[in-house]
Amino acid sequence: MEEGNLSKILSKLKGIERNNSDFENYLSQLKIQSRNKMLREISFNIIRNSKLFQELQVDSNGLCVAKEELENIVIFNFIEEINLKIQNNPNKKIIFLKDFLDRFEDISPNDKNVILQSLEDKGIEELNQEMKNLIKIFKIKDLD
Image 1 (cartoon, one colour):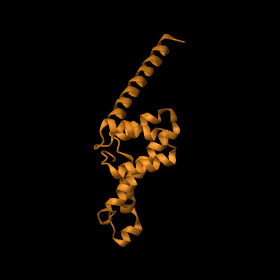
Image 2 (tube, one colour):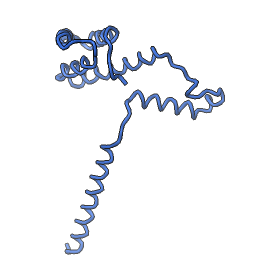
Image 3 (cartoon, helix red, strand yellow):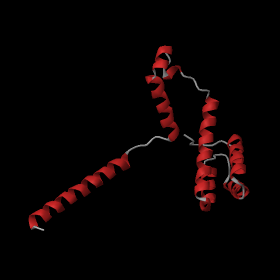
Image 4 (cartoon, helix red, strand yellow):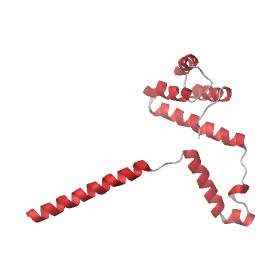
């Protein structure tokens, strides 16, 4: 291969690497919304752009979802996400449960350890129900 062609190829490869690192930096700085916020935004866009809703003169401001129902959906998604993580990686079950319990504001560290021990040996269905009960009893933070 000629010296000139080799230097051109090396120059192009360095340019590609530089562009690639610039692109990676750009992607790392992007702020990504939570799943629930994205679904809400998609729903509102569908309503805004739907001919049926336009004919009914319904917009996203006129849409009312009961706060309790919305909270139930968020809680269901949160529990489902943890259960999927446990099913996909059962070796890290305790880590996922600790993360779940860390979301509670009202539970002391000692109580969290006791609860963790009680949840440790539960199957997915029992675990699902116990998690729902804990969320009903204690105040949880940062679900969105």
